[in-house]
Image 1 (cartoon, rainbow, N blue to C red):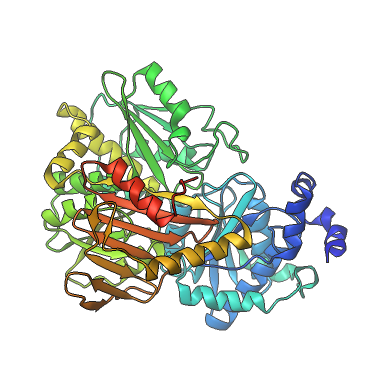
Image 2 (cartoon, rainbow, N blue to C red; image 1 turned 135 degrees about the vertical axis):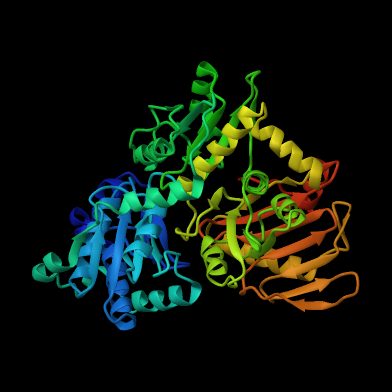
Length: 551
């Protein structure tokens, strides 16, 4: 197999990546196969069926083409791509194959964001959408996410169906691909030029004008697609007190100035904070490369820096809506089951119904779709820095949430307050719930088995107390059962099956789940306790047998 792939290296698009890889990493590409998982694939460049290259992308595109042909009467699709290496080339390959199979394809002539893809699918009423991105993964990664007609990532049922079509195609090097130039010219269409204006209009209506203030903002797109769209949206809302971090607002698929282009990581803000300290800006905002996630840091008048985690940002957005917006009669907030207690408890205290869903924004989109007629969606978030305020998009959307944050900060600035002050108010009202998501890496096939063994062991050996806290309920989303430890009553969990365990205390919860995209076991804490560090360490050591987190 390897020799055959080497013969195709020149046309693979990834020869330069392959040549720089270790022999072990190269070999792994020939021994594995890229699998289509929940809504898509994500992987590293290289040769072989286990890496991203021209041939594995052709296999994916052909499988999607067969799926759309068999399941849609007149299939159509939107394809967007970000600034990563080979994103545009992969978009071109996929578009040509789909068009040759009588599928109408709208393709942008430049890079776009993930929220814009979701909006475009809904606006153009296409059968599906494809976003080529690896979000905030390292530079040698890329991926393909598939969206349904509602603009949300396809659900597990559809993902399994698409995977079946792809798996029927065995050898990526010997696919029956016939590109029809007549069909390509007929079916590949440019993205309508006015689509962004309609998207901006939706955001304008959602946010409203940002009030005049002397709030100053530093913004970094971390080398991604956030510029020019974030400054443009803010300008539409009459906010121009924004400085760009020039070195990071230039397109760079190598993400040269950051260790990780991820607003969850404090290091991603270092350059922007340095600029903010010099210019005495109040707020520092970062978006990830495809602009579905965002985070912010606040600088107070003494120059002190305050970081905010994803759950805190979600809670602040709910506080803004409660304090400064007129809520509908039946307001609904949606969050994932690991997104912390703070926002949920604050929302409930103010008459907002809270719906919890599995991890993944496709489940939030499904919950929006299933709201009753008398219920009104107001906000959704995940602790991993993904937020949604307007349902005209059905995925995480930093483009609409960045101006929402700035509007709230502007209002507070005019009142002599800060976002940190507002967060303190939330803590004083509902309790000091601290969130600490961590993870432990388990490398290779052995690591996957270790994760499975650990999860199964925990299911069978849950103690009465953990870290000095009494376990009052156990939620196992694999068996879809909730066991109340007080009376041993068993309740059914109505959410789909998922390999997640959540232990409930009076003081909050701890949850564990294997990562869907990385060799990690993810560990979430949300607790209101005085000695958080000691308690969290005791819980972690019990679960991981006295080992330390490494990610």
